[in-house]
Image (tube, rainbow, N blue to C red; front, side, top):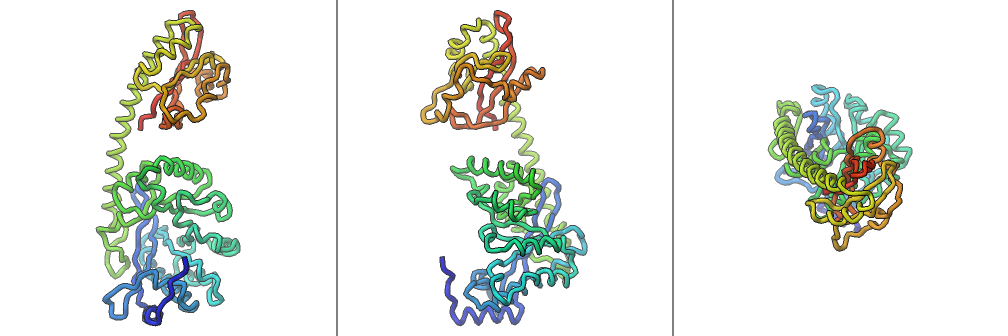
Amino acid sequence: MSEKKLSPEDRALVQQVLDGKLIRILFQPVISISTKRILGFEAFSEGRSPDGAASVSPELLFSQDLEPVVQVGVDRLCRALALGQFRSIQKMYEEMLLFTNVNVNILKFKEADPAFLFKQVRKSGIPMQNIVAEIPFGMLDMISDEIIRFYRSHGFKLCINDLGVDDPFLATFSRVRPDMVKLNRTFFAEDEASSYRSRVLEGLLSFAGSSGFMVIGQCVESRGESVRLLRAGVDVQQGYYYTKEESASLGSEHGQDPVELFFGKIDRTYRLFRARRKKEVGRIKRAFGLLQNEYGEIAEKVARVSERDFDPVLHALIGNTGQAVSMFILSEQGIQLTGRAHVSVKGHENGSSRNGVKGMDHSMRDYCIYMEMGYDRFVTKPFTSPYTGQEAVIIARSFNNMEDGRFILCVEMPHPH
């Protein structure tokens, strides 16, 4: 979509804002719920009309249709004001971070100087390591490796902003090596695609853990969204939910400690999530107890028959025991001795035929290795059932049948969550 052409009146208004420094800086906290503290603040800029009666929209204030010298001037003014107001906060809390947006669009202008950010920070007296340069994911291709190296060499942290669930982020991460990544709302929206999003988020969090970058949920607007992110493992968040009852203008002139200002909301969210999570864990524990009882009943019936009757007994039991989705029996060495008896759910036979083959070697699977090492039972990590399309687990346990043979009974059950 092409940038909207500005009228002479619009251009004159932005020039007045720039000349009069008519910018209001707003700060939004980046919060760690698990540690109940504020990691830093992101600075936002709001232009004001000369009479102070109205705000100037960000689309106008940062329009790419403005003259290059004006775009660069607005960018520098906003950052200078943000640094000046943040300095008082950083004096109180030495490790507090300032998240500042990098306007990649202006780097192409000869008037722009990539080193100017460094000069502004040095002039402000804020340590370089307290600055987080935010770059939108969609604009990373417009920023050179040279600029990324420059920011890093001076101690700035790099944050990829506005990451979407469908963005091809792996190759980009290897090039940029971010310190932080902010997820947009596509990762925690509650709709029919939420299970897909949760799997992508789980993979991203695993990658973040091994790569050493922090994941932040941005644009959190409600308590429900905050709790949903916490359940997914994202405890560092920011958004309107944390500021809607508080003043977003911070600085020494307000006479308020910025940490104390937001602590109440952080503490309430922490307590709410902990209480809810305890209830969820209790419910899951009870549900697993029921699954274990059902498994015990199946194992008791299978133990009463000879090896040659395993197959017909499993097929007779499936669908008649409660929640069992599928079941099969392995030799003590992990070789599949039976077919995989399973419930029939139309439309969800995804690759299930390869799992029901007699003679298949399961000895490399965790449930066999754990049995071999002396454990009496094993429950797998959740996976998508090929029969129901829902999350499931396999419960495995050794048993002796009527002929005193040693076998492993594997029963697939719905995963309680």
